[in-house]
Image (cartoon, rainbow, N blue to C red; front, side, top):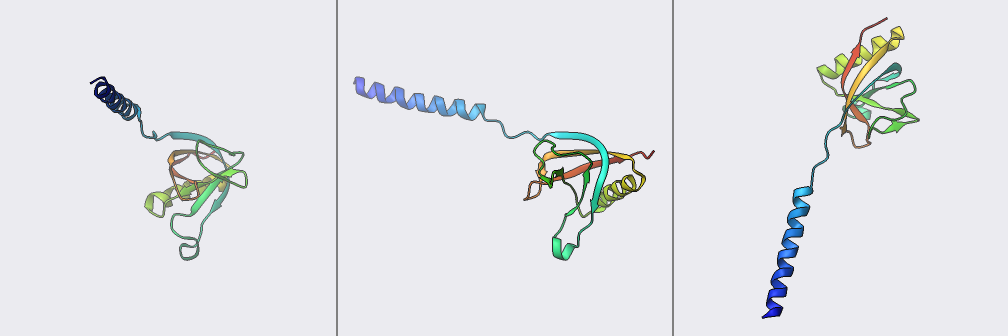
Length: 127
């Protein structure tokens, strides 16, 4: 009888441990990050050879930002191939041409397969 009680207690212990593990699990939280800087490079790539959503820009001195991957020492901010991405491209290009700073927002969990972050907003006010 003691053996069956011990087996039952062990089963209860496993169930309780599993329940504690499940209740303490929290999925990764999206982290919206903001930065400001001068545009170093704006890149527009051919859709047929480079693939979709590969237009990008980098900021002077921006070597790291959250979980965003850097290329050659600079965080790469991708822009989607949609009207919103085109507007962000225009803001980044205008800032680069004028030497003005841009404000950039990214969600560092919203990345492509290489780890480059997609810009979710680009702000430009000019000089």
